[in-house]
Amino acid sequence: MAKGYWMVRVTVHNAQDYPAYLAAARPAFEKFGAKFLVRGGANECMEGNARERNVVVEFADLPTAHACYQSPEYQQAKAIRQRTAETDFTIVEGV
Image (cartoon, rainbow, N blue to C red; front, side, top):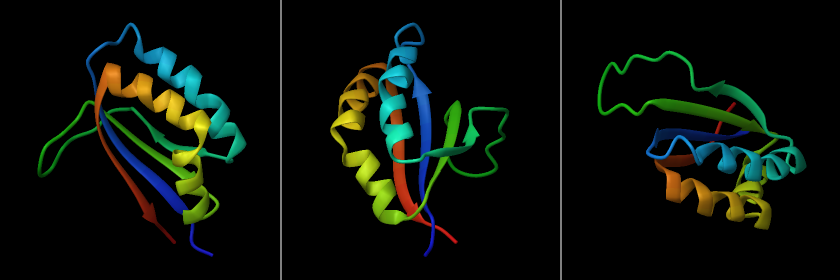
């Protein structure tokens, strides 16, 4: 079965409060076996519009990626993220 991925591009507007999002999201990541492949780091936008942070999270499959996003644990964290950052968030099936 193909893996599921979160592809997330983030511009943090409130760096002081953003760590609260990461802490709140941790239980969902642990529950659904999230594996971070990309988390921040240097990047260079070759085309289109850039954001300061890029994150790629791998899940066992697409349904697990969706379940993590829709979980009560992540929805609580998402509310914090939406107050502290602007985000482009895509869930995609991989190989």
